Amino acid sequence: MNKTELTAKIAEGAGLSKVDAKKALDATLEAITKAVKGGDKVALIGFGTFSVTKRPARKGINPQTKKAIKIPAKKVVKFKAGAGLAI
Image (cartoon, rainbow, N blue to C red; front, side, top):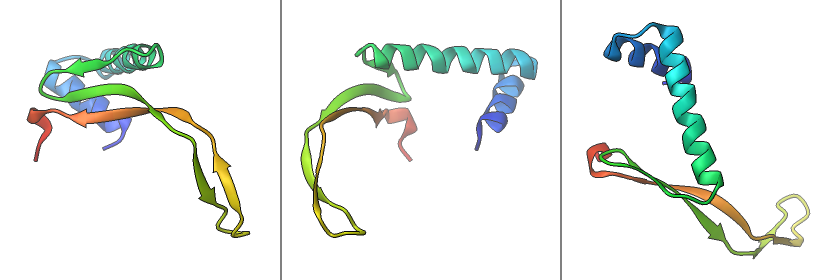
């Protein structure tokens, strides 16, 4: 399912126009993005939790040259599925 299909499902389920559903979806995604970029955890009960975790620096190998490289530390977004999302 892509964003357009999701917008159509939201519009159908909530009785909104597709334009209003797209605005609601965009606002939701923007709010989640800002919170996670700010270091906050976003917990949607029954769906899941978005959080930021630190990935430490590590050694890797360039597959083309087979030479060792250093991969720098960085922050990544982690998603943990909630009980309502379990299949």
